Length: 113
Length: 111
Image 1 (cartoon, helix red, strand yellow):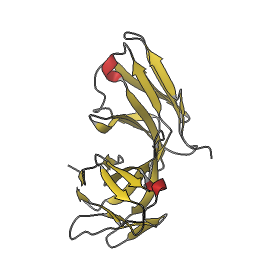
Image 2 (cartoon, one colour; image 1 turned 90 degrees about the horizontal axis):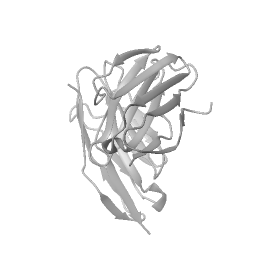
Image 3 (cartoon, chains in turn purple, green; image 1 turned 60 degrees about the horizontal axis):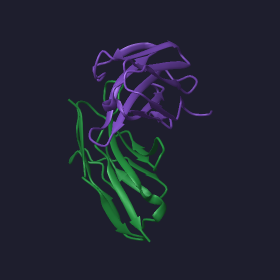
Image 4 (cartoon, chains in turn orange, blue; image 1 turned 135 degrees about the vertical axis):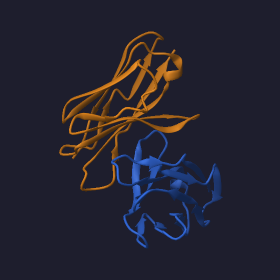
């Protein structure tokens, strides 16, 4: 399996623009997680899905952030409008309930200028 | 709630030194415990895990033992290499489906 695939790897955008990050989980995995990593706050869980349904979005910082999982093989994290403080590395991870570990993608480094 | 406390970094060691990175946890029920490693510019990779008390996880020369009595899962390696330079995260999973991570410990190995 190719692992969790995220795109793009790097994104630079101007403040106020819409940003969409994409994730393809490992086939057969039924949980998908979005994390944000910054120097100041470390690794934060933003939202996670089970069988395409959002289970806990309490980590989503503001209404500017939204996430969807239209099917088992694809998820998006959207920021609209983006702000410089959103600059971070965003990771997607997936897992299968019967196995306890989560597998991470390579991350998307977002820079909002 | 669940929480993980790990040794603050950064940690700098010479090659072939002995490594310990402390990790303690608070959890309800019987958690599974993990160490993840993040190499520069990459995502997190599972390094090792233990799913019940007294289990020892091991991989790439690293070891950690699940100690229920001290609620700890310290990471050790007998002889570190420059290639071990990375950020190490302790994590747990208990009951619910999400991982709880520590803040990470940056390790730098000097030749």
